[in-house]
Length: 182
Ligand SMILES: [Zn+2]
Image (tube, rainbow, N blue to C red; front, side):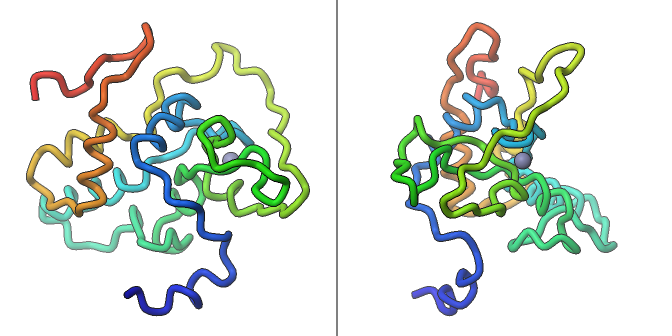
């Protein structure tokens, strides 16, 4: 029984339906880990937790602001802004379904702009001189490497993420099975 969930989530976006991690990984990869609304590259949150854990293992005892459970701006500014989440393209209140086709990657900031009715519009962007990133992975490869390393203890949820991320990636431009040999 989770205590206090109601209070903690009262002012936050409605809890989303439970999506399998495999589905979430598919959407992150389909969208190249870029926010649908602002185009910014997003970060896979658990990667930052493992990064912090690795720094700790190396003996660093100072204050860090890499990761925080609640993505507080003061405690994890990168995640507060850029943590990757899934958002509805057509909002739920407008009949948008919680299905893969209607899910898009969003950064934490754009996701927080809950419009409840007003459709969010992708921001106009200046065309990048060399094109959009195709190989950004949200640091998910770093997560896989650290999670497989046994140097940091991972949670059951992180184990699920690891299994989902290890699914081979389709597409000619992608590594197939980034951790091949494992
Ligand atoms: Zn965004």
